[in-house]
Amino acid sequence: MTLIDLGDLAGAAAEPVAAPVNLPRLGKLALAVLAVAGLLALTASAPAAPARVRSLWTAAFGPGDTMALDGPTLYLNRAGPDRRVEVTAYDLRTGRIRWSTPTGEAMSGHGLSPAGDVLLVATVSPRSVPGTLALDAATGRPLWRADGDAAPSVATGDALLAETGPSGAITALRLVGLRDGDQRWRHAIAPAERWTPLTEDGRPATIVTMSATGDATVYGYEDGIARHRARVPWNGVYSATLLPVGPYFAVVRTSSAQTVATVYGGTDLRPRWRSEELIGYVTGCGTLICTAGVRGVTARDAATGRERWRRDDMTFLWDVGGGRLLLSAAPNLASATTVLAEGATGRTIGSPIGGQQAISAGAPGSVLLLRGTRTPPGRTAVYRLDLATGRLTVLGTVGRLAEQDCRGTPGYLVCPGGDRVTVTAVG
Image (cartoon, rainbow, N blue to C red; front, side, top):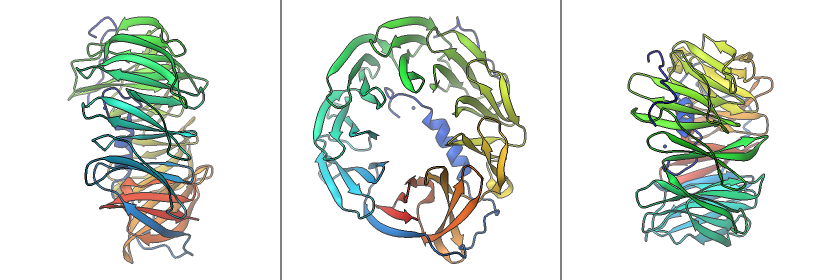
């Protein structure tokens, strides 16, 4: 990593190309770092406490299948022997199938997006055209189908669709009702390779698109009308993407030698600030933007770039929600320290923790930490980390889980592994 040179605004112009970007690659990088075999702050032996976790049931889950959690429901998107795909909803507590709906597509491996009482299924047709199928979340009844990848908004009751042309570029934007699919507006746009909605007060306000050469356009969310255009540095690097942060967005450009990050206003496309330090990656951390690398972790105000806090003793981070971060001192947690920290101040909460191989959503205000045990071998220990106090509670052990791929919802862990997905109760 070297010093960042962000270039000039007047210079040259990730999941599916047309998908709204929220830097999943960077989020996964941080999570993967925290998932490295670990720190002995948590004992590697099975915890000596009454077990409060137990395996409930399993279901078939093969390569290319996808899943989503929403409250007490697990949705599985799976391809059958004839390569026809169907979505199945399971009751998390009992494993009972609530409904199963064929999508009529020839390919699997595409996402599921729960959105209130609607489940959006990302599909690909035999003609390789990205599309969206909306299902009633309670019954599985098809509600509508349309071309384009979708970004749903429960707050406004609609879904934004990005339609893809024969070249793979985004050629049109369309806003439809989330439940009825009725078109609110549709506009053809200049070909773009990235797009993302930007929010104000938690509601989508504008849409930013970016062409392969850096032609950026801002559209109004309510009417799809173009508001502003500008050229920003974009191409000529290994990868480039957009990171939405409220009404602002960061353009993150990575080459073999450096990571470049510039923050722009989401209405006027004016560059607000840039990072000028050695960084490994850039990501959102609550309402701030964080950079992480060999010189530490720095959190900045999204609008001005003003430094809010810095941790020179940490080099990696993961936003666990609730205004909390996990910070780590090195990619090899066997010799590193991991701490829970306040997102607004960077202050450590509680004692150092470590040894986790995965982190999953737990009960409100907590996350679950998982670790393979040595005594007895072949099991997974489950811990609950309280995000308010930093207190770590041993919940028990279960048969070995694929810790790095687990997801959670209050009361349950769902872990794919091999050709099955395992549901575990967390009490």
